[in-house]
Length: 412
Image 1: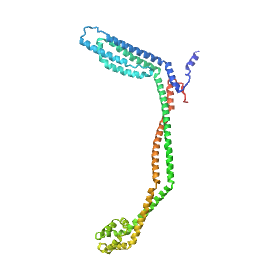
Image 2: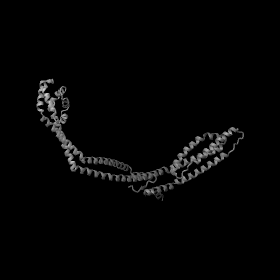
Image 3: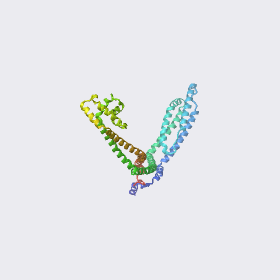
Image 4: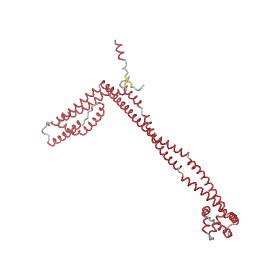
């Protein structure tokens, strides 16, 4: 018989599996089963009784008469002032107490009560010191009941600690944390869906823009632009070579022309060529320079040139006939006209303008997409960090502190 009883006592608690929706009710049942609710109800009744007793004793203190009739009037007047201040301060303290309606409010109430009692003690210390000289019994009775309030709170907290209230409170906190995690996750999932939906329009727009750019790049206008730019490069190279050949050909005349300009009658045109042969030849439609060059050739001995230099100048002047000059000028003008005509055609063609416009739209749309994708990434990261399963495991672990054979649905 005794062995059977011992076997029964050693039997483990039956396994309990709860849905999350049942946890709150289970905790309330647990509180009731261990007597937490009962002790709290008794405490509330005690606190209300203490409040009643404080007010009763304040009434007694207010109406108490001095036993010694020989006390000087000035001392009586001082005592009355302290009595009124003490009664008012304690009355305000009692009426300001917010006795908790549920024991989950007890911790906050206890901390607030301790602060208020400490403040009351400091504020009434002098009042109580004076009153004890005249009405020690009545004033002491008030202070005693306030002390009993403090003892009731301390006693209840001690009882709750012994009965595992902290573990119950922790389980409630973990339940709230899990529910908050689930709610936050639902909000984030909705936000993620909304942000992903926002991606659709700019992605479609980007696709349309890229197609328009591709179509423009495949157009005859774009081919013309590409070919025209290549042709421009060829023309610029030809122009550069023509300019360089002209400058090289006439370089021996540079110094003599500067000297000749100081003594000739046709000074303006000579100075223009001395400064810039290409620009001057371009403007010299009648090739007036040829006559000036002939004149200069006749007075070379007056230009203070060395013999070798003078020989180079004579050879250059022999080559610089009117026909030769016209050939160089026509060559430059033809190339420059071809360049201008090609550039004018490029300006009139809108293909590149349209492509650049579409590329600006593309860049703007891509930037908008990057911002949206950044938002999506941030929400995804937060969702990854926010784990309802981890919160559920923590809730289960805290419940097992109260009942070790307890499981939660959703956790294997």
